[in-house]
Length: 371
Image 1 (cartoon, rainbow, N blue to C red):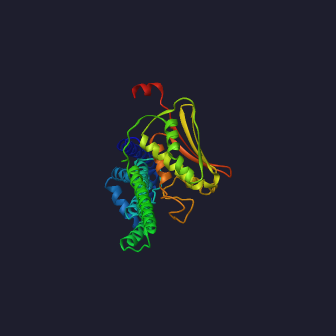
Image 2: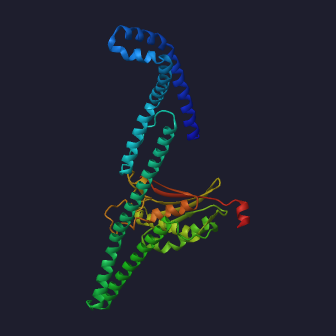
Image 3: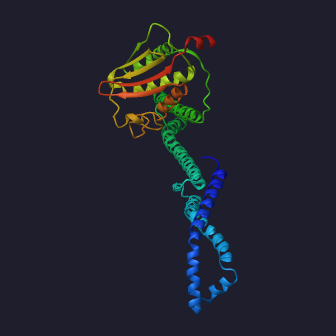
């Protein structure tokens, strides 16, 4: 942009020089015009004023006055576009100050006002972006309250209902009592999962999720988790299969958080891949990256939904029933954790299989020594 004061002084000097040159050119023709006017003045009594001026000194009086007046006139003419542009800027600033943050100032000419217009436009753009971010944050907060209220209310209502039946001894025998208690426990577990998702997501959004990074063998971690899920898979009529390299694939990460990623992806695969009977988990090396895949062979994710599966509260099943999906935060939490570890996550789905794949940078030898 340059120094505005320097540009303004340079412009004024150039305008003054140009005004003086134009004045000189104009006055070079003045003698002829003056002689003609004086001759007419002595011929016509109505022009007697010019006779008086001529008798008092004539050209010696008029020329300095006219020169000064012409310099002022030419300076005003040179600055007229600038004054008009200044008016446009003022009107635009008034509209912005009244709340119209979409208003932009036209960038014209090439002077300090142009720099001012660009600066104000940049300020307005940042203000507009800030207001949009604030609006999105408010909308996100409202969505969070609305969606979580719905998801929490359903199991809480059931839990209170069955506990009320038990409290009022409204059961036929011990078998029915145990059935009510089991359902109440199931709802309590569901509530705990929802609250944990909500708590972790809000802490992640506020960058307050605790993290202790240590070298972790990603293949070993994946194998352990698949073993832990063996019984759950059998209960769902499914089987887990593992494919891993012979060596270690060490990444720098928080074991609890990466475990949460695998758990969320496995739970998602179990829920939506029941018809496929198998869940395959593969871990491999690609260059300096560790790649983990969780694959199920159930119904595919519709292509219209695929780009949004990692968005918060987005669920392929839209009814938000507790029997057909989770809180809608599991995949968003997984994405946040992986990206927080410097990696990336994606989903692919077709008629054959659905793959959730994430990548994490491998530790090199120097990092291993430091660790």
